[in-house]
Length: 153
Image 1 (cartoon, rainbow, N blue to C red):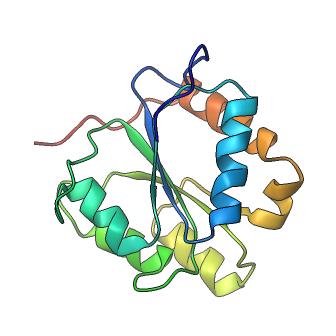
Image 2 (cartoon, rainbow, N blue to C red):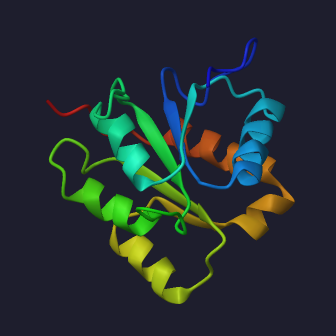
């Protein structure tokens, strides 16, 4: 998916990897970014394995180069969001990836697991669903004030 024409970017060159198996939720996130006139490139993966292929440049995919942020669901087939982030944290080239969980799970074990894996945030879809625009604006503010990790080689 390409960036939105005539719009501003969260941060120059920042790419977004949306990892979610639910088509409706993915479309809602994309609509919110368009509505907020965010121009960043957004790539979608339908599960953790597909996300790793995109990040590593495996499975016939070109690697997603930093800076990027992941918006990941937890409940997905093949590899869920917690397993994905655990894999990222154990990968020397991907361990500093910035991850926000955007999920239907309000399970306290999932929330604890996410933050134990150094998630930048945990957002319930039902809360964000009322106003995905607030989520987009929060990410915009976040990327304006933080210093993202430098690419590791």
